[in-house]
Length: 52
Image (tube, rainbow, N blue to C red; front, side, top):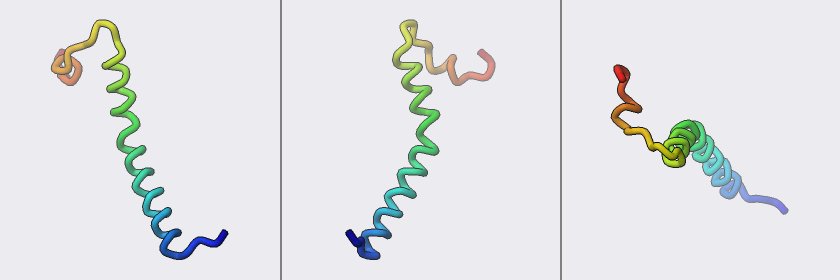
C-alpha cells in the first residue's frame, strides 16, 4: 500500500504534535493522578508553595 506525499506529511505532523503533547503533558498528568487518587487530598496552595 503506497501512501501519497500528502498522507505522509499529515502522519508526520500528527506524530510531531503528539510527541510534543506527550513531552509536556506526561509529568503534569502523573502529578494530577497522584493528587486526585490520594485519600487525604493535599491542598493545592500548600502543594505549590515553596515555604510550606
